[in-house]
Image 1 (cartoon, rainbow, N blue to C red):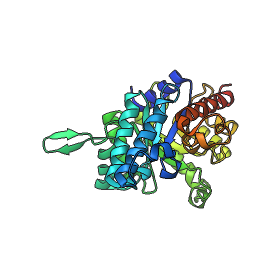
Image 2 (image 1 turned 60 degrees about the vertical axis):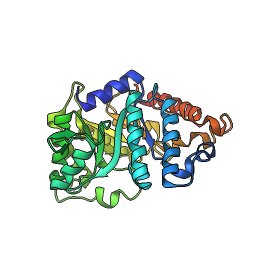
Image 3 (image 1 turned 90 degrees about the horizontal axis):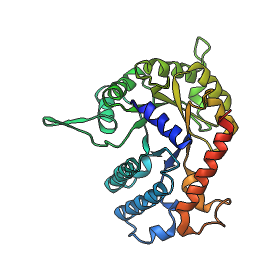
Length: 309
């Protein structure tokens, strides 16, 4: 079973097309967790790991995947990377798909090095070893073209992994580049969507979708609908729901008649649920994991009501 089929199977098992972003800024971690550890890079990293595990413990049976954003671990150096690796390992042990949000993009041996690190293997002497064996997908920036994507596609084939390529992102200034018109009248994001379809031909699975997938933001519903039509074999990772303003009815435009086609990311709305107006009066700070669980259930039900026709 290739990577996209594994992801879709988990989504169908949980009846939940969502992924929990794990972007653990130190300020969002409850004091009850932070106060257990020293204010050092190592101490903060340990607090983050405890926090992540509690969120995973409360959601693994209802959410099919997690998406750690590498920057929030790299900022704490080696200790942060240890926490990142342990988070991925723990999520996999709980049966979750792991999508690494790293947005890598380079060419030649550098691209191959990134691919080896995160979805492939690295030759160590006479042995081939995996540095981060618990990662299923990685996000990529296609700005450098085919040269920057090819090593990852080859490793997807070799190791049954997947990639999500930036096509139309959810941030406000994405249009400065992505909406520019080419000589043939296409926008840049339309052209990238076509490239993603082409790059993914050899990795289409049983559901008709490819493990070469795309990032398409919920904050631009017209473009989301348009790209779904233009890229029928491309699965979408859809950021922008919740805190960024993406609505369930808008997100539904990225799905097909079988209620497949996308996985919706929520980071702040899940990680910070215990602070939200909806849940802060129902759960104490100590019950932050339970608050995240209830928000995950609410999110699942809201999205399914819009997606399932």
